[in-house]
Image 1: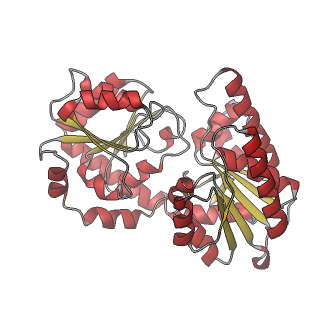
Image 2 (image 1 turned 180 degrees about the vertical axis):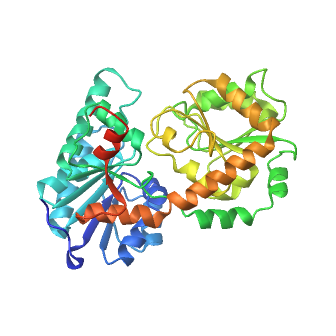
Image 3 (image 1 turned 90 degrees about the vertical axis):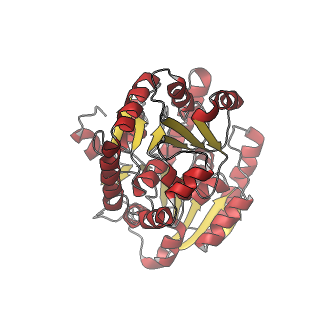
Length: 402
């Protein structure tokens, strides 16, 4: 059994591959650990967004260039830099997430014998792949998990999927609360939403008062199920009052043409740092994704009182309580999405009830401090954790074969 960390021993390195991940996935977390007495260092590719994240959190940034794609030469250079950093700084704990930073950071932490090594699994890249690539990604995941002393799955369904794929070690696996790797600042989201005039915002976006707006926020790709949403919006059965609002960067050029072909049925906005300020325009969030770890955008929408239609995909299924905080459909089923949108469009009071319940759930179950306390319990090897849960207990309770 590893020794629990004392206050004097709390030197922590947190690593992600690129700055965008640090900025969005670690919001408030580094500052909280720093203010809780930890000596915190952020490691990331040193892009401008990473620098902004480190400045916001009040922690130093150590830049190590990491390539998201498999790049043997660059990966070896990055691994050497990781090892050099950890040998010099001698942290007592390392917390890494996102695939490339996790693999390289865990290899380095194991090689220099960092005693507490946490891998935060925010999704499995190998889902949806096949052939040699799937095997290679499986091997990378397996190695990263074996080198870790602890593995945190950000949702129960993700832990189940890892178990199904033989990527699960009973003595290492953890969950925290109801899921998520960082929770959300629900009060801050609500304050921003309440500062927005919904009517003015809708007018600026070219939306009318009677429109029922189905929103999407995220990377505009088929992996996120955007094609399912577009198919629903062009379906002849869709209610004439339903409109789409897409916010995000288009990563699949073919989808740009499909969006344009829908004309006034859909409004597209490039990515904005003020997503919260656009939530009041939406009546429902649509996330017809193929796979997730745990979608924080659902929690952000919930904080704004906006319910979600999501899929029964890994990760996404944990974010919605069907019939209570939103609705679930099967992956790729645009016909079911049409039915759900029409139902909510015709019964606006139903959406309001779902939105109120979603808001209550996010305020009660996804406070950031609860998630951070759970992370700290794992990193310190706390023998009596209050927020961190052994994942094996949850899977056995759900009668999942491990």
